[in-house]
Length: 85
Picture 1 (tube, rainbow, N blue to C red):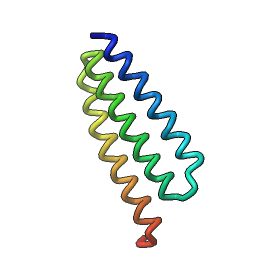
Picture 2 (picture 1 turned 180 degrees about the vertical axis):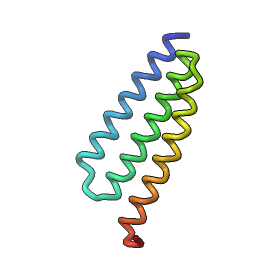
Picture 3 (picture 1 turned 120 degrees about the vertical axis):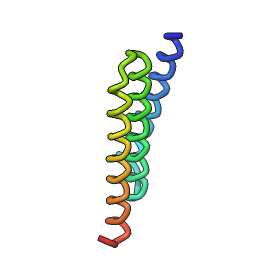
Picture 4 (picture 1 turned 90 degrees about the vertical axis):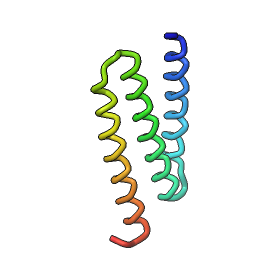
């Protein structure tokens, strides 16, 4: 069972690496915003996995709050890029 968690963490790290590359290279601000949202999603998934591995549900609560704050941040960046602010 623990091997599944190891494989999941490796896949999340690989996804984070690709998102960081897109964040750095991304030719437009929209690409960078999508990469930032992807990184937020990967971090939330990592927190949920940590919650399951360590059997501590506080990580799930932190993941929920982090996802809401990440969503609000992406909405603010998108509105700024749109020119509505």
